[in-house]
Amino acid sequence: MTASKPAFIALPGDGRTFMIGAHQVIEKITSEQSGGDYYVVQQISPPGAFVPPHIHTLEDEIVLVEEGEIEVHLGGALVKASAGTVLNFARRTYHGFRNVGAVPARTTWIITPGANFQAFFREVAKFPPGPPDFARLDELHSIHGITMPAPPS
Image 1 (cartoon, rainbow, N blue to C red):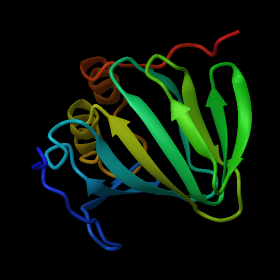
Image 2 (cartoon, rainbow, N blue to C red):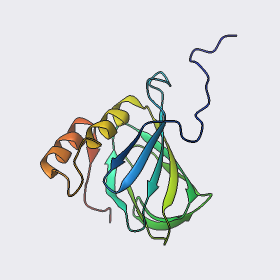
Image 3 (cartoon, rainbow, N blue to C red):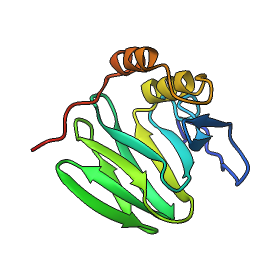
Image 4 (cartoon, one colour):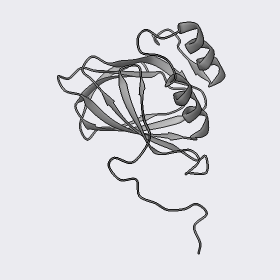
């Protein structure tokens, strides 16, 4: 039987690296490489860095915490996740996180399907350093099916 997509190995040091705010992102498997099925990135988040709680309407995210400790908003709960924790951010689930540790947190993200989220990340990566252009960010959220509602009660 022949594989429908090429198999390959993404080695340490492989992949395009860019910044999303304070977070360093390394693309390990692009949506093109997976035939659009998924997008895999590693993320390094310095102490205090965060992603505000939000909802994806189009993607599921599986996150492996490899190093450090993050505080996770998931639904209405707030949970600490340390190395070895696996998180399932199913689409339409309120989620976000903050690095609450004293060292950078390293996480690996598998986002499925991959094309829309990869396009979102690549657009946000074009933002210059410093506070983001919130009007453009809101526009990108709308285009890519991301909402930032009030916390669930």
